[in-house]
Length: 197
Image (cartoon, rainbow, N blue to C red):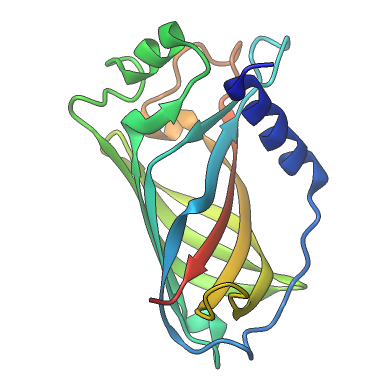
């Protein structure tokens, strides 16, 4: 099995497991947390003609958390994604995605997310925000679970690990080609470790 195939199996297993638990923030300070690029995974999947549910990923993105430990609802999140960094699984599909009918990366090289509100939700949080893709902005709601918030065991730096999941309609961003044969709904998942510098 090649490295790429193995990676997809690992991502699929992580998405299927859904094993997360909420944690409080008492062991870490407030402040800015930046994503650890070596432990951050942004994936998305969709239904392809009822035959398969491909899992694609973005390999280059920035994520920042402004954490208020005393009142987590006052925290904020922002992210920027290099759209050209998508791992599409094939060169042909990659070229289609980069073209004008899909991401039009020549004119829209980045996607951005900015949070607009955070609400405690049982064991986790509901993160509301605005997502901009291909120059079009639409609201996005994510379910967030905190895996751990504590000093990193290797470097001692305050670290927050989280999982965020949600569903968007790609047609909201001018990406609705081939619906409904290819699903309009796209499931997204972020697994990330964020470290306070």
